[in-house]
Amino acid sequence: MKVKVDAQGNFETLKKNVNSLISDGFKHILVFHSEGGLDRWASIKQDCDGLLDKAVHNNINIFGGIFPGIFDNGKLMKQGSILVGIQSEVHFVTLENLNEPHILETLKKGIAPIEADLAQRKFQTLFVFGDGFGELNLGLINSLNWLTKKYPLNVLGGLTGRDDIKASHYTILTPEKIIQNGAVLAFTKLKSGIGVEHGWKPMPNSGCEVSEVNGCFIETINKIPALDFYMDFITKQDPAIANQKKFLLKNPTLFFEKVAIKYPLGIIRQQGKQKQIIDRTAVSVGADKSLQFSVEIPVGTKICILHLPGDSPKQQCDKMGEAAQAAYIKSLEDFPDHLLDRRVIIMDCFGRKKMVDTLGQHFEDIEFKVIAADQKEKKHSPIGPLTFGEISSMKGGYVELHNKTAVVCTIEDR
Image 1 (cartoon, one colour):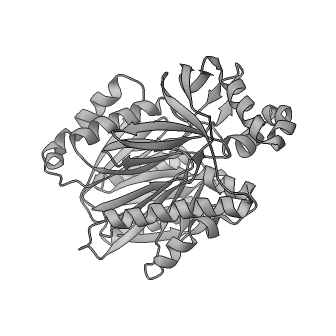
Image 2 (tube, helix red, strand yellow):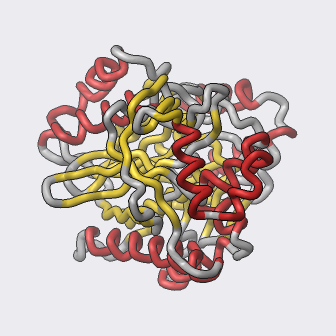
């Protein structure tokens, strides 16, 4: 791999760095681009489509996305881009308009040319980028679970998006064009190890069940309007939220920053004797007292309400830092020992940064300090985006979509 970092965020610099990697012989280029400065571009769609189309006609494949932030060596960047030239063979599948039932059939057709290699496990790590404000992301996750059940792979990815728009937009870079409400899949032969942790814990006596849904909205929990159930439980535990309840519910941004990221739902996944709690954070409130999420949560799903342990903001932030470090250690443990040349890529959540900001702490020190110090001999490691949802393979052989979770990948550097 070769990494190029640009802090300017304009289209001409992005194009210059793409051409530089092409001149160095790279045929596949992963891009993490931050939304800062995009308002100065003439046309995001036209500029990106022109660059991507010209590249693919010269057998150069560019993929990745636009995110609310990116980081290089653990330092946050509000604008600019990180480009990663990849030497490994890469096979691409683009999924547009994630609506059932055709998505799985499109995936099956897309992997047909590499099925023999997949069966022989020649492809090792799959990058996936979807739309954080798209529809039917559950269809994407279900299709990935079909794929990895048949062909075991490490999966690493995230949901793209722009915080300044807060709606589906052109943010997914595919080899052919920039798209929305879809996904790009990049199958590589790079070996990797993945660790996943968030740090939140179930609150006592908060276990419940999703009883009615409408797309990405949970309408009732335990047959009670979802917002009523959720807020009644939280206000009994948190006097500060109880005192501001009416005000917080009138302001979607404050609800997200002061309530939702602090008390996410936890989806209870039971895999044999092993239980996993997956963070699923509400993104908004519906007019009918429903709760909106970035992906559908099926009726009958067992859930709980989570909180971040600790008696002070520092203790709570320490729990988040410990979770990120634990994910990093797990990724190292799962990475093949005999491969010495490696790099760390992290899919980290925009909501984790919001939580640290709310607690009055410094995100880079909480999330990246220990990992960056351990990687100090490796330039541009760790790198990655702040996402609107993290995608990873999990112990037990399935794929999950997370919120406010550190997904750490130690990956072969070639």
